[in-house]
Image 1 (cartoon, rainbow, N blue to C red):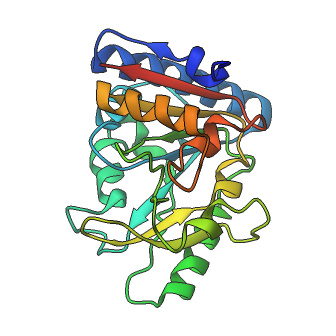
Image 2 (tube, rainbow, N blue to C red):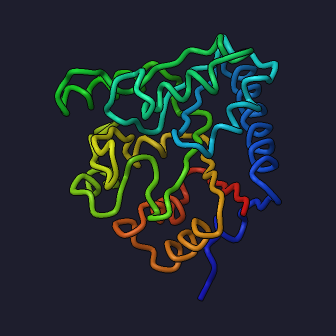
Image 3 (cartoon, one colour):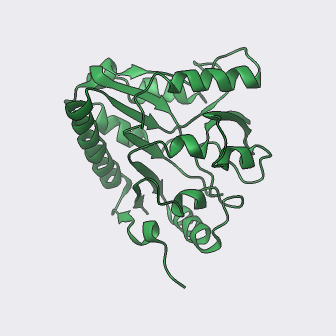
Amino acid sequence: MPGNRALDAAIRFANVEQAAAALADRIAEIIGYAVQSRGRASLLVPGGNTPKAVFASLRQRELPWEKVYVSLTDERRVASDDPASNARLVREHLLKDRAAAAHFYPLHRQGVDERSDEAACGAALGMLPRPFDAVILGMGEDGHIASMFPGDPALPRALSPKTEARCTTATAPTEPSARLTLTLATLLESRWIALHIAGSAKWQTLEKAAKDNDPMAHPVAALLGQRQVPFHIYYSP
C-alpha cells in the first residue's frame, strides 16, 4: 500500500520542547517574510495544552508584532474569561511580552444564537489578511481537528468543499460541548498549515486516518489527503 506523503514527511522530535521550538522558529520565519513582502501577517492558532510551549517561545521573538493579526481555528462557546476559553488561553500564553502588540480577533460572541455566532466568527476572520500566512492545528486521539468531531451532525457541512460558510457551530463529545469551528474550506485558504501533535496514541490515529482515508471517521484525513496547501506534521512522542 502506498504511504501518505504528509505522514512520510512528518518532522519528528525527541520531545515536546524541541518540537515547540522548531515550530516557533518556522512560524517566526513565516511572519517575518509575510510582513516584509506584504506588510502584514496572519496567524491562526488552536486551543488546548499542546500549543502552550509554542506560544511561550513565539511571544519572546523580536518580530513586527504590531503588523501581525491573530485568530483561532476553533472556540468553545463560553465566556471569554472562562478557563475553557481558547481566547483566554491565547491572551494568557501568546499575547504577552513582545507579542502583546499583535492584533487579536476572537471568534465567539457571547449571548447570541448559533447563526449569529457563526456570523460573528466570520466577521472576526474577515479582519485578518488572507490567505492566512500560517495555521497551527492540533488533533485529538479521535482524529478531530479544530472542532470538527467524528459523529457530529455538523461535520458534513464543516468538511464540505462547497460550503460558503467560514465557520460553523459544532458539538463536541466532551464539555463544554458547544463549539465554533472554522470549516475545512476556510482552513485551506492558507499559505501553510502545521499539525502539532504529541504522543504515540495520536500518531497511531494519524496512521489509521491515512490508511482508511475517511474524513467522516477521522476528520484529519481531509488534511492528509489534500494537495492544495503545504501541510507539515510536527510530532514528538
